[in-house]
Amino acid sequence: MLQALDILKVAHRNTVEPSMNLLHMKEQHVPGSIQYVIRRYYPQQNWSGDDTGMLVYHYSATTPEDNFLEMRYCTTGNKYCFDKSCTQCAEIPTQNCSGKHETIDVFSFHFSATFLNQFTHNIKLINKKDEVLAFKHPNSFTKIFPVCSRKRVALDALLNHSYSGAMENIFVNAKVHELLLYSLECLIDEKEETGFACKFLADESGRDRIYQAREILLRHIGDPITIKELSRKVAMNECYLKKGFKEVFGTTIFDFYQQQRMEHAKYLLYEKGLSVTDVSAMLGYSSISHFSAAFKKHTGLKPCELLFR
Image (cartoon, rainbow, N blue to C red; front, side):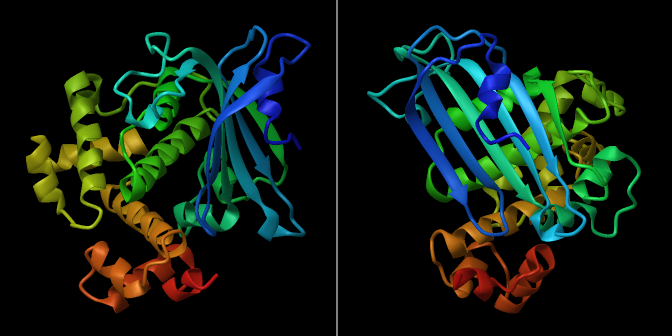
């Protein structure tokens, strides 16, 4: 099984790997949630390599609790500035950035079998992608794939955004789920860009409205919004909105919204140490019991169990 930073060796064209200076690192290790590490390096010698992705599937029939899926990426061409944080900078982290240090950026996202179970519970498995998510594929494997434009946009967004605190957690979770969807597509479709079954998504304005709907949902994590209200805000027919959202993001509006709320709840309980009462109120639940039931259904744990870990 390849180790976390072996993505660098895969991406690097030369036989001799240049020495690296670690400029920045960000990580999250919330139990039962997405585990991730983002490292930004400055190579001391010339770097020649391609943007590269790697999907690692680890399966064990004897110890299923150890099963996991991991996505790793290596991208180049961004720049890092020591004078100001890139998360607060209006410049895009590419060749146009005034930062002096061109970086090699390494991303690692780890998903446990328990976490991924929420996507396959009571779902009929119809292809390899589904089997991998449900850990029904009987053999471990590693797949290397190119970083298409959709993945690159999502990865760059993780390096260059203006969010902080709780809003940053919501934003990062959404982007990581986006990357999971795009990377799993590589298992069944080698094309970098895929067409859309819904004809209205062929129009860029139609796709923009679907992405706008997702951003509105993220802004309303603690203030639930109905699909009717959402459709009005993006000026799109409810039926089109639901179909388009499912095709673009691979999940329903309701499931996406619940997923993001519960992931944010984990962060608030574990990282921020907030009480169950406070988290329930922040996420807009009418009662603690309703929140606890939703959290248990999503994570398999009671909120208090995560709080006292």
